[in-house]
Image (cartoon, rainbow, N blue to C red; front, side):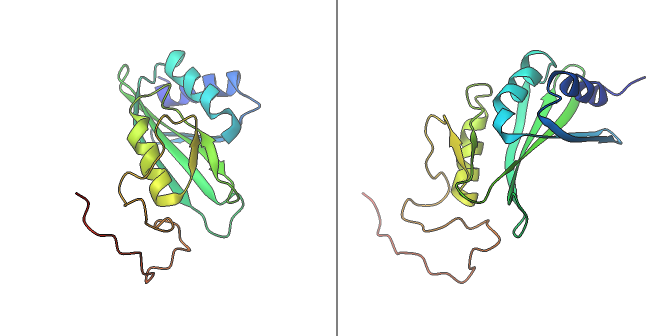
Amino acid sequence: MEDFGSSALRKLIDEFSDAVQATHADHGDATALVDAGRIEDVMRFLRDEADFDVLMDVTAVDYLGQTPRFEMVYHLYATRPNQRLRIKARVAEEAPEIASVVPLYASADWMEREVFDLYGIRFDGHPDLRRILLYSEFEGHPLRKDYPKERRQPLVGPRN
């Protein structure tokens, strides 16, 4: 019997042969690397046509020294037939930006804000893109690998 993740990857490749850059589906770990410029189309297709109805997580990885530097990672879940799929998209270091998937998955709202706060990746079309974990005067993005861990931040007094 064919693994649902593998069949979802096959559907994705058939629909977006120009956008899918790489895939693998080993031991139930189905992953596709897609063109960042097509992330909205890919995610809409996976939600509407491939039954991935839940966005479980959005995060980023910093590959300092590589081009493109950042990789967005989306973990999707299909409640029926109980399968997972990982979508990745590479984002450039200069003006790191990718389309928001909040219009498709409301659960992406705070997850995209967290990635923006900690990595500095902007989400085009996000309804409220502002810091979520750090205070607004915080300088930099602390999960970037080149962030100086000994850096002193501006002191901010209590707010009333």
